[in-house]
Image (cartoon, rainbow, N blue to C red; front, side, top):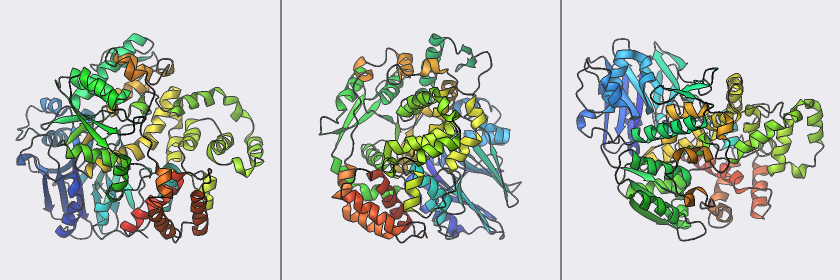
Length: 633
């Protein structure tokens, strides 16, 4: 796990060394173990290393292959690198690193090497002969990669702030990106909050050559590998009958075990987040089954017994004989770390503070790698919207009523019910259809279009990037099971743009690598092909639980869901009031904000108006903090 950067001069023959060193220095937190730069004419590459596999200095980057033709910077892990190496018997490997295995694979197969890789990655390879740079990002979008181009240069980096540090980019906010941020609390790729700074999308590669970028998508989540006969493949390529419930569950178990086993590959100790919930408990149980005799597990506990889940975490820890560490935190610990967490954000998010505090606590316990159960809800229908979507599609007749009639009915509704759950229902009724692109776009909203039009000056006619992307995939989505349609929407929306982004930026801010077994390509492709009749939960994530029997005790499976709810609403009105007020006042001066309306909305929140949610206010506070800190216009 590392930070990568690159600078290619277009008009000059020589890249500026000071620029690549500045870009790399701004990501030192991503790799405290080593840092170096490579220069060759117009090309400069930079790298910061967090040593995980092959701890020797010979595996440091930028890394050049034995022929001297290719030089690479790489962020991530190739979990099956040993298998990849076995396919390259003629290559004279000098290290035991996954870095060299990846570069050797590219030297052999070019862009097709990605098909052999199982892991999380963002990398760039300079071809000294062709004077080109090849960049790629993993299928699920676990690792970030941003880029920028103008007439004078092309740049890329793991973080937006690294690109901004070059001094080459005008720090101006992208209004299209703001539309997604206010709607979904984060920015959807390929946009970023800065004009002209883009994100390479998940499952995509890019070739920069001759001053031009060519972009290709190499993996599409809607293209699930299932034939018309309902047959899919298991981990060893064996045929699986998707109408055979027993075979489906057996294959899930095998794929989960394979995924966890892959993520145990490391030359440093591997730990695991253990909340005591279903997903993290499955991961820990499979760690033990995959060969980790005594997994290192970490649980965040609270003094408040109604929120504390440490009892359930300790059940799993004892069952699997883990080296268990209970980290006790107070709610005020999160408040005290707030500024540090906001400073860690490479891109603003309405969420993520808790990820920072938890990651920091685990890193301070001595770990540099930890497995997480994140992703189980998205894959196994764990969120309420999965069931809601099934219910809405069962009432498809509603959207067969002419749109003008439905819009006329909703237009007559009193303004007082246009907010909250009632407001969302009105939006759903106004949607042109019950397709996933229409309904998911409403279901995950923070600010409704009506509220956004009141508080901002953004163009009302623009659709969000997320909505457009889901619409573009509509034909592929409609061929998938309904619950899998929601999974894809979740991956493309909240999961990839908020959850994974927060996990990366907050964990890497404290130099902790987080690995997510539920985001394994082979597992995802198989589960997305499973019919709804097996996946629809009888109880929370029942397909996952039944597939894992007898790993989880009933006390874990059937307990009442807890989870600590931080008192943000109270904090915003009390401890954080002056902090919020300062940034609300500052945000009100922005050209894209309706300043007076925003201040009025803040006052309504302070007065206790139940129609004003703290999350809506917090979006503006976090955004303004980030814009001000990074001097963005």
